[in-house]
Image (tube, rainbow, N blue to C red; front, side, top):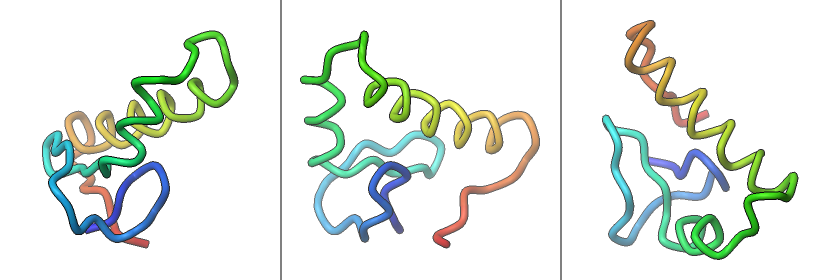
Length: 64
């Protein structure tokens, strides 16, 4: 499965939310990023979009 942030193959332990993966590298970048930046907003919106699609629409995130 691929990370929803960087789209790289997840091979290590990662965050798994309803089958959606976030790799350790992206997890660290999210944790250490400033919430007032565009970078943080991109992360937040990708996670939100993926989770909303999975929970409310029944659409599973694809490994495009």
